[in-house]
Image (cartoon, rainbow, N blue to C red; front, top):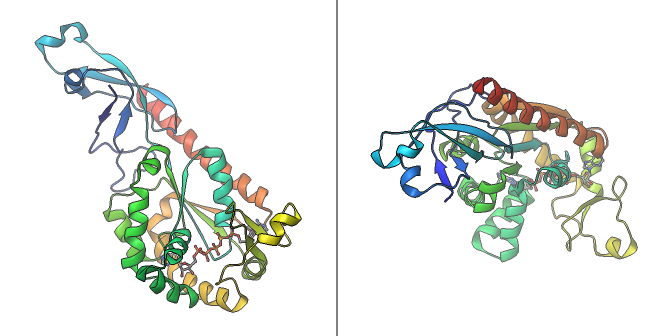
Amino acid sequence: MACIVNFPALTNPNQPHASSTLSPVRCSANLSKSLASQLSFVSSFDHGFGSDASIRFHLKKSPTMKAFNSAIVASVKLEPPKIMISGAPASGKGTQCELITKKYGLVHVAAGDLLRAEIATGSENGKRAKEYMEKGQLVPDEIVVMMVKDRLFKPDSKENGWLLDGYPRSLSQATAFKKFGFEPDLFILLEVSEDVLVERVVGRRLDPVTGKIYHLKYSPPENEEIAARLTQRFDDTEEKVKLRLQTHHQNVEAVLSMYENITVKINGNVSKEEVFAQIDSAITNLLEQRKAASGSMAA
Ligand code: AP5
């Protein structure tokens, strides 16, 4: 059977800051229930994404388990990464999320997309959310917070890791997020100058069929058929982006202060491929650090 082994107070060496603990580790060893219940954790672990690692367990005293009396080695698959991406409106979060998920297989959870999906249902929450979005303001926490939490608790996010886009956007959201027990491994901040942001917003178009993000100048549609069906977001006007930017500036520092020790700042003014190269290197570093940390623990 596959078992879950809990390490409730084990500090993650990659994140020595307060409250960073390793989450449950999925153990793929073939063990009987009675054997699993008698394991006690002894030493090494690997918190690297997707890699199998050796983890040693000692059996607690048990007359029925004499055959395994000294130790066993189990193959474990550890929790995948949890990454946040933040930046001003149209800084390129969605565009980069497409590239990151393609390479790393994380589940992309975008607060803005969840809200637009809610609006599309015609629900009361959706109607309220739209009022705030049209004014470029943050949608109240009572609508957003549970929406994001519920999405991250779904099995696919737990199984594959997540890439959280546009959340948290205020201190209250960041605080609530922490209270739910979510601990990101990396906080990516896209830095883009304001004139570039405005140009990106007004030229952005979306394909309602594939969900792909285009830009009339920088990422034009591949053919006439796609071009004909592209849509524009209701908040993608120069006037509205200025309001959205104002909201962003009012809140960003408070959010950053919560994640400063895991933040990587990315120059988002360059082409999407060049932006991705920087992000890719940050994620690779994260994974390598975990591997190195697990190696030194095992030694
Ligand atoms: P949301 O949907 O999250 O919008 P946003 O933060 O304003 O960000 P965008 O989606 O506009 O931009 P992006 O950074 O993803 O850029 P993209 O990749 O598309 O939120 C909308 C609203 O919902 C908010 O205003 C708020 O009201 C509400 N909301 C959301 N989250 C909330 C929360 N947590 N709490 C409360 N309310 C919340 O790129 C933009 C364009 O540029 C595209 O055309 C793209 O092709 C192009 N582009 C991208 N990168 C490049 C590049 N490197 N070079 C050239 N062009 C590029």
